[in-house]
Length: 276
Image 1 (cartoon, rainbow, N blue to C red):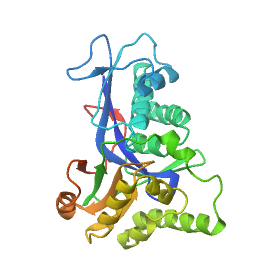
Image 2: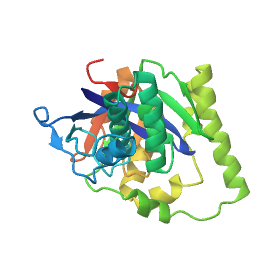
Image 3: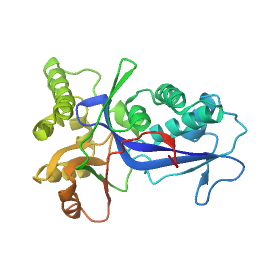
């Protein structure tokens, strides 16, 4: 069996460790003595292999992976890999899809230390992950996520260490309100508030100050009328934007040359067999 789990863009500005979108950029994983063509052998320390063992998978099983998700760019590579590893272990142990999916969320969240990326990779769509619970909302089908990724990566751990240990009450209230706007916008269909919803004072401004290239691209995106929202994806350095499908390629064409730009649908399925 080959399983697949989508990439994700987390935080979405103010939703620190609790909001995420699943992206149609897959991490694929297979188990067996020989891997499919173009797949790479997963070493013992690979996040998919660690999750496979943590979910009860046989340590002697050879694992093989393939993915266009760029590591270290804030697109949930490790989260997708861990979800895929834990899910594959469950399926090989005889679990059905739903049970294996529930187990993959538990294992991946424990390994990640937070549930946002893992929840998006498990469930697809837009997710809110808090207090050991995940709620999912559909994203309108005419929207795309434009992702700009520079060549130089960012360490999530190093980025977190750069955040202030305390925040002002005013800043906390600002970000809580904007995170709530994200949920309300998708729940009601009023997407006009998303530009305000993607603003943040808890982490995004600090991280953007560390990456002037990312800050410049985000500002450029927000200058375009086709862009509904733009945010630092995860801990960065990628910047993501929600755009109407009919204007996405035009916006993408105006971004700096030499870096990687993708226009992606929101993944609606989450983890599962690759042939499903």
